[in-house]
Image 1 (tube, one colour):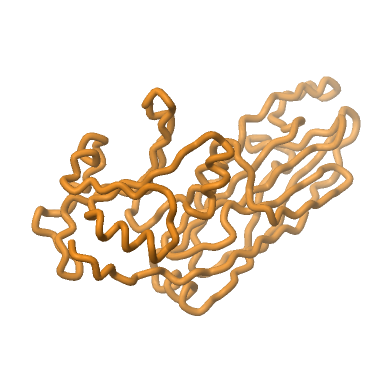
Image 2 (image 1 turned 30 degrees about the vertical axis):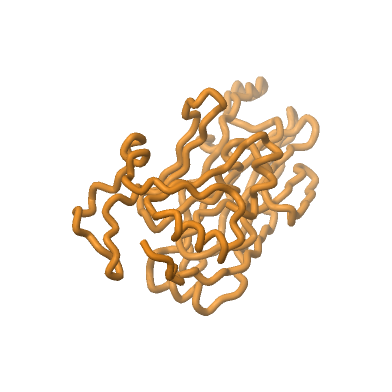
Length: 271
């Protein structure tokens, strides 16, 4: 969150984090991690309960490492407008997994990392980027593919039959889990000579592929043994114009991320 604070401010957004930890714990954590945005203490979990996100799976006597943890929320992110109305919410099924601010911004139409890579074919202009250049245990991050069909061309969308739809095909990486691909809404193209109506993309569009570090031995080994990670794959598509349908084609794509060790240091400040 700290690393994308400037991007949030540029979009007119503020940032604050709320937890049930006491102020001394939060102050110590902010000092150690160089955090400059507000960390707010909800000591009696009043705000957590008001938002309906109290972790009710924990008994009032539940403890971790000798510390009572009852009162913690289901982790997530709310987007609130200037009128105090919630306009977006982002939560995960597992409490260990967290969508990054960068990944959330992508879902709001933001840009990927600054290390974008451009590709060009006879049919497309492609820019690949990534939401986060560093990942860690539980990180939910996104691969981004921005695609611009060349003038008078279209590519086929999922749901088409008889043609090759656009798809991102990634090589498996032990320790990483793929989530369902997010495809934008397509449009129907009427190909008069064959009396066809097919789903296509004719205008620039974006594919977003979410991934997370698995909460498994493979995922833990990935974080323990790796400093960098390269994800490779192919962008598959088939392009046509109003007269010619070109053979299916593939563009090689790849992304590299740094792997950060999880900060498990406990604060020595009194609770």
